[in-house]
Length: 415
Image 1 (cartoon, rainbow, N blue to C red):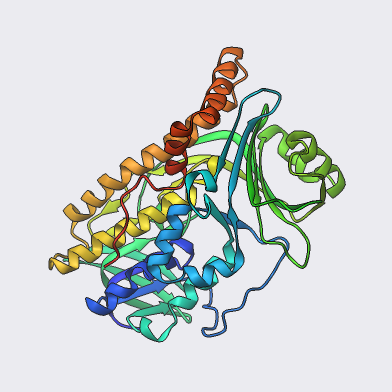
Image 2: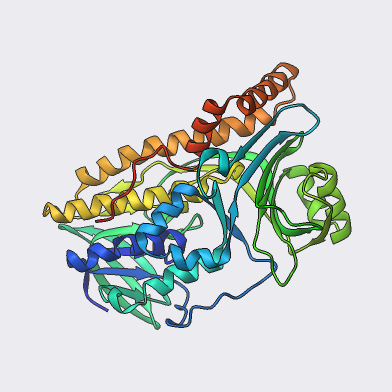
């Protein structure tokens, strides 16, 4: 452990570890000293093993996120345990609107990928423990107790191995998730809007192979997503994200497995086959959350600590990852120019660019959710005509697909 770091990242989860991986090449050439503070013990390096579990939670990666992980040098390892999305099927239950997207039509190998969170996390952390990652220190298990501004740096209080320590850093990045107590202590305010809905998340097995198809099914009680997962020991799996009104969530969670599968089948239909097994269920309230202050001198708030959005279209983590690489590019450029990494003007320029992406992505998910949750006959007709016209227009479909894949954004450099 050093007494001073150029960059101190609070949180070694997917966003924090991705930022460290994005900065890794430049940390060698530019001499960046980086620390990652994590509350949980670090998995032992050099023993990267996939640990299969039927109930593993998963994340949808856009095609553009694949390009980011290729630049970090981890894609070849990551792709050994993930499922490609080769088709996306969007439908409106009880109505005629439907749109289909395919990787073949868009001339890409896949529209996106579904990766289990624990596998992505292990691959990222394993990369940061390789021999060429000597510029990155892991401080864990540890807790950040205070972050205070000082002259041209941030002072950081840390509790590690039962002892209190004081560190300093040019830049502190808060990537400690949506339940961070530290951000509250620092007085970072948030805009918050509830949807009066819960997401019920579970893995379920259809009686047939999913065919690498992802489904987005809009119903009168909220959207349902079904994501293709890797087959486990001969058993087909899909990841279910079911949006349920708050008033119904307790009833849904109390159903036995057979009744739960019947309810899902009734809501979703038989397009993906007959559902024959349900795994462990989780439910969490859906809120739109946006940090009002994402940069200060010497401080950046990143990932779920900065924003949370409705899971419709699965864009939450992809938005966070774009923020990660945009920050990495900004910091690399600043170091090359000899600027302080905590320079407020530089960080404000970064936030101004990311704010446009955030507003666009959050606005799209929020408007889509509200449009397809509305039972007004005119709106219902309009949205179904829109889906049908999109399905019939190759040009419009390509524009929509490129946006969903994250290919309409500037490519990161990371060097």
